[in-house]
Length: 238
Image (cartoon, rainbow, N blue to C red; front, side, top):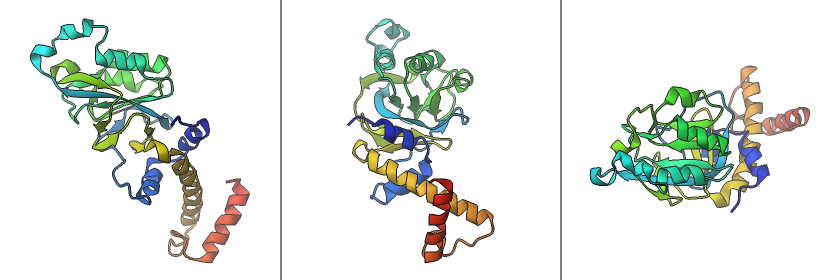
């Protein structure tokens, strides 16, 4: 499936917390990546289809620094093949002792039009990466080159990242808290539901800040809460 532009736009307006609830209603409990954090929290939501890269533990005789001279090196090829609007998601085995990538490769992804990059490992040059107007998520900074521990192997195959299964084409959403994975076939309906949930929660927040009790309001078990929301929605164009 190809991510619709209207679905992308909707997902840019909702939180990963709201998405977690929407997927939980459908029985999916493990879609939020663990120990994966944004380098720059001042950016809007990252939304794009997953393009994946898988690392395995490095074997020293196969992974010297000279492998980067190979134009077919999987890490370099992944950066050059990641489609415009997609998110490069890297399975770094939750190991941040060696970098998944550095500022040059991340910059290349940015100028090629990718939507962002995610790893459950770490980035080197993290201060420079954090300064880019580009969505980047990792576990923590890491200076050593990936070759010291990671061997790039597969491109655009199913992977695990932050304890979540990621299939090529899954929809990746990142906000100021972290990264969420939506199975591709659910993206449209989840986006619609999350927009509705966000509108209601914005209404509830306003009411709570005015001093209203959450009982009967959140969830709206009283008809008055539903009526008040309808009035709020009309007044706010939501």
